[in-house]
Image (tube, rainbow, N blue to C red; front, side, top):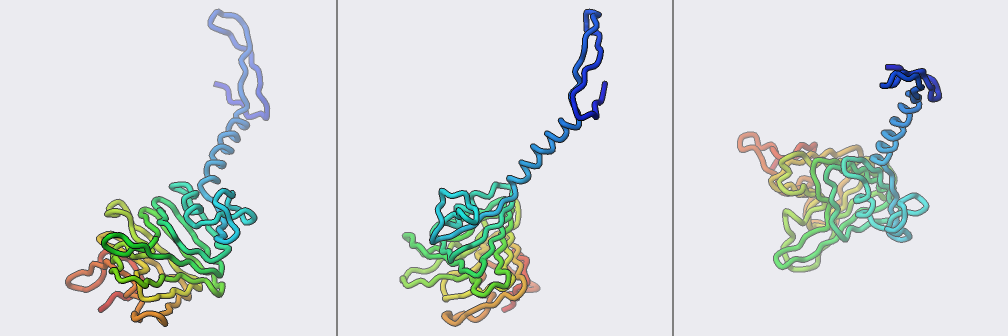
Amino acid sequence: MHYNPTPMDVELPWVDENGQLTTYKVPNDAKKRQTYLDIIGAAIAKMSVMYYVDSVNGNDLNQGTETEPFKTLAKACNTVPVGGSGIIVLKNNIKLNQNIYTKNKLLLIDLNGFELSSSFYETDSDVRMYRFIGNLGRTQIYGHYIKGSKIILPEYTGDKAVSAVYGTLFSPEGSCSNGIMNIVVGYGIEIVDNGYGYLIGIGSNTLSYTEGCSVTYNFDNSDRNDRAELFTGIVKDSDSGNPINVISKVNFSD
């Protein structure tokens, strides 16, 4: 075996199977190795992306760049590759009007001084919220201490009951038996509650919730007055009273 570390292919004398003297080209190993690294690097780059969303001036046929932003948050989240990570920066207020599936993705949504809200829709039996659905991933909502960064739970003026499982902004998918849905909220975000629906719906699943720095809660338009009331589906240990299906800094005591 001949290793060629030179920056070019080389030809060496060689005796073929018929005993004839010929030449054998040895490829440039350094060049071949760099080609492999370039291919791997390009694949890794595609797994880590950054998109912008402008609900007013954007278009989901755009590339998602700062000058050509997407229109919907769903488009940006869906474009992040499964198994990859994406930073999504808002350029205007966003209201969800469809569910967003986040399984096996790391999403960091930068509110950038704008509002993230949702809306309700009615089924034959109950009222549900358009929401983030997923597991085996992590969704981070940051405000970066920019004034105006808010998560707003919507109002509801109908007469049906809001679902405790589906009337939530974040909820795990299915039984979530293979992993934890991880939610991080922080860095200067104000969470505004209008008294309907929930921030987190856990059901029988497992969820990790981390509350970062300087998160404030606004209950001015709500009958609720405690952040623990924004969670539903908590299962508590019969002896200690501690939640057993959520890992969180929120106080769930009665």
